[in-house]
Image (tube, rainbow, N blue to C red; front, side):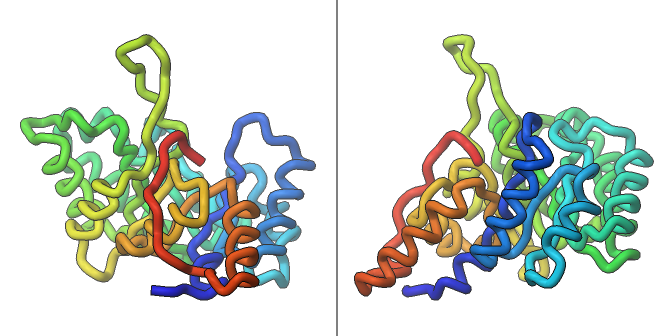
Length: 260
């Protein structure tokens, strides 16, 4: 299936989350998002108000991360942070679940944590993407294998009011056998699993590992409607190159690894 520029650019949440990003880099990232007409920027809480000004009139929404990147803030802190972000102009919220509580099988805590953020965001007219951080969940927990665990979390997120379930933060580094730290981010397996685990009311967002146009197309083919990315310019410049050659929106490739 062939896709238009708007189809694919409209999937991208341009990620501006690296901890070292300066004000100048954040502004440049917002200008880039406006130039490429992506769905949104995903930015840190302190920069929401300024991002709204940078993007005013562009049609690009401002999204904000909550409890990022480890999800371990108290529920009330997440709720309060959400309210602040929305009052500053955020239209979308990307929150991280409490991973340790999930792995402990404290499902009630996890659901209430997600619900508190969803209720606060929805009160302001904003939508919520709930990050599972799948790299930490592959071995499962609470008596469930990895896939069953992820399905259970998807069901909880939907019940709590999530608008999207999301694979990863892009910063969920896991210690490897050789002592290094790395992560996979979005995988084809997890995207298909998450899409099947939710009703059509809940959308799916890929994050981490999607670094080129073919990967973006593959994400869409797997049913995801949003994709976190820093490689926005490379993806959409490649689309324009293919479009000029009559090849745009062609056959998808595989999702890579290594993150935003």
